[in-house]
Amino acid sequence: MKKFFSASGPCNAEKHYMLEIDSRIQNIHTLIENERYFTLHAPRQTGKTTCMKYIVSKLKQEQKYLAIYVNIESAQAVKNDVERANRIVLSILKRNIKSQLDHPYYY
Image (cartoon, rainbow, N blue to C red; front, side):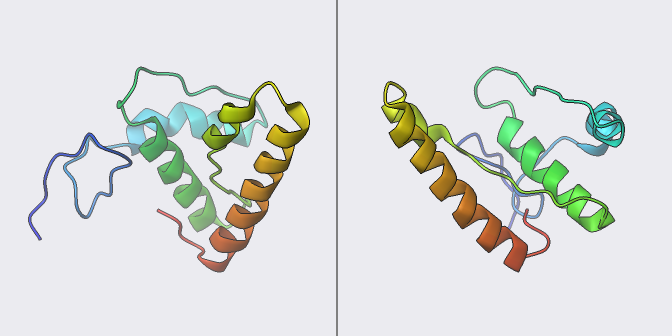
């Protein structure tokens, strides 16, 4: 399959043309090593999800951290119902923990 540009969701380096990520996430890796929080903020369709999935994959490869990617965007639909939103988040978290721990290199 020939590579192509994708702006419709997370990219996969085997299928899509991508900019190199490693040098751009070095600061994030340092933050993680130092047990610091960080926020990944950028405009739509600039690679945030691709970047986070890549970071999770790299952390799993190091076998030093338990890293899990979780997208809780669906809880936004019930943002005025905190209990329901929490149930949605916990359900997503449970499902992702199980599926991603069964597949060590999620990317």
